[in-house]
Image (cartoon, rainbow, N blue to C red):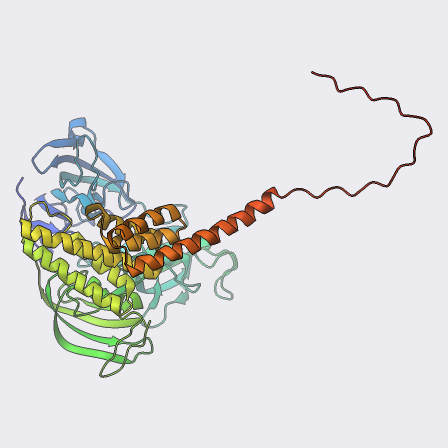
Amino acid sequence: MEAEAAAAPPADGAVNIEEVITLTEDGGVTKRILVVGSSEEEGPEKGDETYVHYTGTLTDGTKFDSSRDRNQPFSFKLGEGRVIKGWDVGVASMKKGEKCVLTCTSEYAYGATGSPPKIPGGATLLFEVELLSWDSHKDISGDGGVLKDVISKDADAGYEMPDGQDEVTVVYKVYLAGSTDVVDESPEGGASFCIASPGAVVLPGVVAAVKTMKAGEVARLALSPAYGYGDAGKPPSVPAGAKLTVELELKSWIKVEDVTGDGGVVRRVLSTPKSEFKTPNTGAKAVVSYTATLPDGTVFDEVESFECVVDAGNMPEGFDVALTKMKMGERDILTLQPGYAFGSAGRAGARAAVPPNTPVTYDVTLTSFESGKDTWDMSDADKVAAASGAKDRGNAAFKAGNLECAARCYDKATSAISYDKTFPDNVKAAARELRKSCHLNLAAVRVKQARWKDCVAACDKVLESDPDNIKGLFRRAQGYISMADFLEAELDIKRGLCIEPTNTDLVALSKKLKVEQKTSAKKESALYGKMFAAKPAPPAQPAQPEPTQPEPAQPEPAVV
């Protein structure tokens, strides 16, 4: 089946037959509508038991599964990970009676491993899906403690719901069950909190319900005491053990994403256009505006319009990483930890300096961008040039003391030229030298970080193709000594000295090895000495008086 161009949903909400709609920001799930569903009924929600008919095929048309062949609809709970990710996304967008073709890339299907023997690894899959019906499960908590009825929805809200570290603003009124008297309500403008850490002020039932809502949605909740004010109540307005009714509106929410997974780069999405899905890639030319501040709010840089190349070293690494997540017209607040900003060196500035080891914040808007070439679209020479640029950025980060940034740059460089079998001989030679240099530099980073196993691993890659590389032998021996693997260290040092007998670094390292061996031997000797030391003799017994009669002779021990 031929791939089709993606199209954004019409502004008026109307849907056209054969129209292709992109359902995820990265284009991993698209939907081509074959039969339009009912426009008078909302689609299924997270937790609903959903019934569908489907036929799954590979991109070459090979069928691998079909509920129609079994003449039995397939059912699953929507949004709970019971099916592939592409289904949870795609079916949530459907109306009752709708029939469509969902195209799911491997990231939203069975990934790199596939589902042998019918589905190969990395396969894009096509599913013709018909949404038959669903049972609405209003029991949000699963124990009857939070029952939810949807009163209204915003048709333009999209498909995403808040979770994790996302920040929400809600408007609510709380009533005693069966009463019309308001016993509590949100402050003017709404109550804001983080989903992951809402605080004691927000009712547990409200937090649970918000995670099932979309922006602009209004719902009515019935809460048991455990999800309300508990057994203690809230005197004097809420008695002990009271059941509650809550009118709740999700007024707005801010998506909060840990971009790097280690808290080093966190972005808060303040505004994003619904009609845009593409994001900049490495090498893209981007036009941005931003205000950069220190933790105390001091502005150290501000630009109304700045053109930069993503991952070219014009901006801090964390800025570039976050930029690849943004859509055209999007505004984000980026928080960069020192390792992704200016590291231990800090930064001088006209308006204010960034002190060493200081986190920084950027309020940035991506005005426009022009995509760069992806690695697989580059010529062989361009790949080497991209790798060389990444290495240069790594060297600059290393000199500035930003070691983790340097390590990531060296990894990017080696990744760009990891496959060189098709390179012409001259380009292949340049790529291999560049790869070797990056691995050696990465080993130097790991030496400074005292990450000795990683140091040895980086040197291994150098010595696989160049077993006589002096720097590789020297740095690997450093790693071995620090891990007390003295035999391996000695082998590397001896090999290096056979090649360069007067190498001062190796000579010094050889002396260090001997000192370490002696120190280790002394420690072992002392340890074993304590373990096997002779036990002290028992105290002498007092002399016994001579017997008046000779003692009888003792029998010899019997031989068994």
